Image (tube, rainbow, N blue to C red; front, side, top):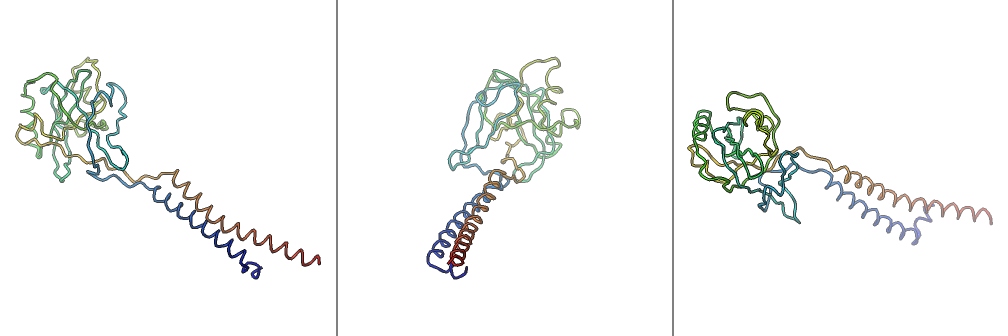
Length: 264
């Protein structure tokens, strides 16, 4: 059998099968690289675009907006714009907030009204408990100087509700919880299920201690693309099968050769 395998015909066939196996192995490696999706890193977008809130969200409907998208080879952050009327007297604080530079503190959150529905906005970041309380008091004293003034920010999903930490103080920004605790009792107004985070200077930046929010991309655990994993296994099997087929055909040819010799 070895003598037959070393003939020019079968060596050529082996080379072709090995080349085919290498091609399959490279395809398997490519699929393996696509199998594990790394966690998103902060500030990973390369472009920013702005769209109208009404085009990406509907009041009283589940939050389905994805602010990060791929357009060709570019990672795009989509911000939204709308027009709001402030309700500063109902402002509140959200504790345990972290800026990108590592500072910890509070968000000041203000209920607002768009032309279609209620919308909560995270208006700014304050470092320090006393500073946050003072900023909240000043926010509550703000007067609405313009009905439906234009504003722009990042539309983010509601967080899970937790027990209130005190009057006007919460540990998470849960839109359903704030609807029940902050808006007027008996109010049946439509409400957006996400909230708007203001990452640029705005009317609240004039309040002492209030900074614009700095938020990166949401960090998620590494994910597995099971379809790519299946393809990787499939290409690996094909690579092994290419070599097996050469061996199988060689064995069949050898058996036929031996049978012919015995028949003579």
